[in-house]
Image 1 (cartoon, rainbow, N blue to C red):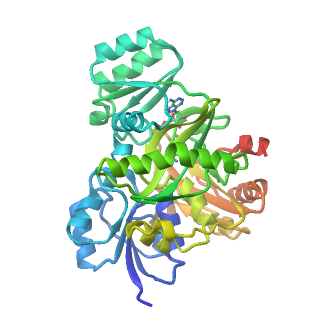
Image 2 (image 1 turned 90 degrees about the horizontal axis):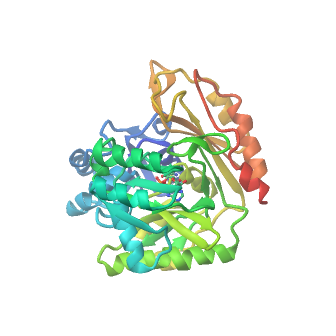
Image 3 (image 1 turned 135 degrees about the vertical axis):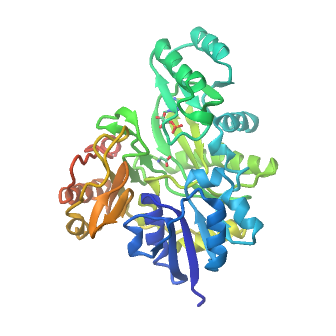
Length: 427
Ligand code: AMP
Ligand code: GLY
């Protein structure tokens, strides 16, 4: 069998988890990560090229004769990494710049949903502060203010009062705290309900669903404090039955994949809508054009099918024939973050206990912000590690992960103690 040279773009927990899964494929040869982290070093070679330096990545893929590149983070997708690789005849997996606009422009995504009847919160788009201000003054609270572009998951404010909404409008449109990502602002109706993540893999024409998962985005227990990239995730969700899965498929995924194809932007890759389960049914509050982080860390633990078979089916238009097998298990992934995150934090803290933690039954530690400095494993980012575990019940998986976490320590480390707690209540 021909072994493939594979390049994985990115350097977080998601990329470590995808690399871990890919490395189990019979077809996987050498793995390269750009830029990778201390965890990916155990699977292959870290290349010191940033995930957004597309010309250098193209040059590297050509020089090293890379057979397949997996484009996982949002930034390179929004910069057109898939278009650039394809233009050079290089095989790459992910949506084009035009297809990933569903994620990088919330204004585009909202108008798209309106055009194709995908259920979402009511909204208006503004680029003029005075007009936006008048709209908020006339409207109800809570109200949600969103910078339209990519803002590291920090461009959304759920404002409880009009004062807060106006402050956030001013931050985005006048003070430009998110730079060009805030040239436009989406003002959206507040949706109440349970928040879940759906993932579907598409080849541009048809798609297959992954089980739903649930991220916990706020920094503190009880879902309070500022939003983060994601502090912990569980999958599959005990409270999502097959009727709800079918609704999500029919009302959200199908019209989106078909709508993108009709608009001449076939969506190849992972479509990940953030969904609120409202009393009126599931509604989309955001689209992502990629695998979620940390959702992926649970999916890779549950996936029984070779990930490269799934990727090939997506690139080659063969999703209809694809059978995806999932292990009959539950998985969780708990993020361990630096003190101060998601605000400012220090790097370079020495991490201890990770070997012992990783030896606990059914536990795998995925690295996010880590770096080897003079043979020590040190912190190098906001989210540092993800402790994943599987079990025959969600409770068992969570107990295993939390037991493993007790072995790990570094100065200032923080993690949520309540991941999966509300879902367990609904078991
Ligand atoms: P996003 O960056 O779009 O994922 O939004 C960040 C968080 O804001 C989400 O995880 C939701 O908790 C919340 N959010 C976004 N849109 C809405 C909405 N329309 N109503 C209520 N909460 C929302
Ligand atoms: N789970 C959060 C994200 O990937 O955007």
